Length: 552
Figure 1 (cartoon, rainbow, N blue to C red):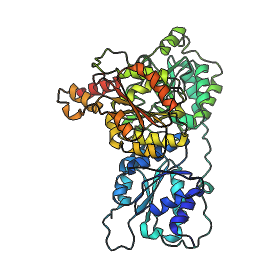
Figure 2: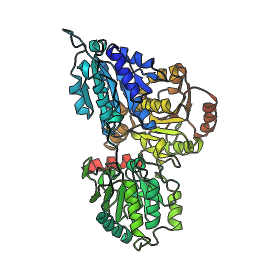
Figure 3: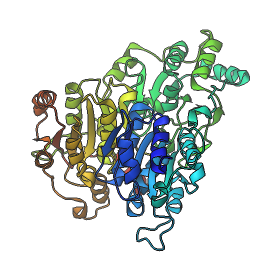
Figure 4: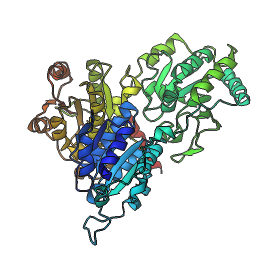
């Protein structure tokens, strides 16, 4: 009979797992080593447990597959609480194989209640303690993960080495997963909404990530053209309609200047597959006094403290958009004249932020840096965006596919961008992945440079380095307080990269990018561009947040 750890590894393979991310310890080393030996299995060894899990999350973002990571028990497990919370709030399907302390040890220094730690993060915990149920534990873990929820499979160290009792062949989660059938909209609700859309003076259709999942992008675009409405997207669906002359781009806190002006004029907003979270509605006031309708298989009345919509249609985004277009039949009277050549012209030249701000000597304006990078980097690059103050600037880049855009803002945690990028790069394996990250966030897990070199991953890291925690210095300065505790100086990431065997250059002039990109393409290792940005430039979202905090 096989050992339990071998049987569990074979079960993961039966679930279609071909890539996993691990940091070995006593509690998981037998399983992880067995996984390494499985045919066609790709194993990536991280240097920090949080990063192993975040890499699996990035891998899912690039492939749509369930991400798989592995950590040991006790202190190895406590390191992943932030990553589990990020995964839960972002609804990422994830299975973490975690060792548990030996069941039969009378004392073990790494003992801690791992299940009790897991549940507050929003993840699910399966304590695999019955040898006769091992197959079922794995199947249940993947079943729950397919519901877009992270799962921890905890297996005691000593139990893993026992023989697996006879229990028949493994039955994968795919055999028991119910087939998802798109929900058709109610005809009466379609009639009512079609009348409102036909009469609306200034309608906007917003597409979210759920619209992409349902294949509704073209149907929503056709509905917009049939009704004369403008198009918009959420941040995760950024770029979906960049080709369209009447797309305002991202809605909410990351909106461009003219788009923000237009949003307050809207009288009807229909959101397809968009959660209408705080970022999308910019805290609640982005669409002014418009009537908001949410179309979603699982609509939420309240989301992140914001009243999500005025009414709801519980249905599939694509089917609803098609039904509305069919019901309109060209009978549109409300927004005649909304679409005009002048409107298209202004949308084409719309910028994220044109405010005049100070640029310190020897540094570059982050807005100019991103504009230059948008010209230099090919449109087929996958983009990973970190968190923090710098995360706004790259959001204005245009003409890039939403499937190749990876953001993780649901928990507001910095420090995960590098690991997410590694996960995306492991999935793509084409040398065309770029991370935009801040210096404070990147340095938290700089040790993963070693992992990038060891696994020969080619990727590009653009550090918007203001020598500080950007969000904090701008808030402290606005409040008239000492900002020195948030300032650390401009770390020489180029030298650090070279110390790890990678390539690195410091950037103080955007004219350097053309030559640096040619150098990146010519080499076969990862490259870090340490861009010295001015710490005096405050993004518009931060300016609004600071102003709001003074009011309250």
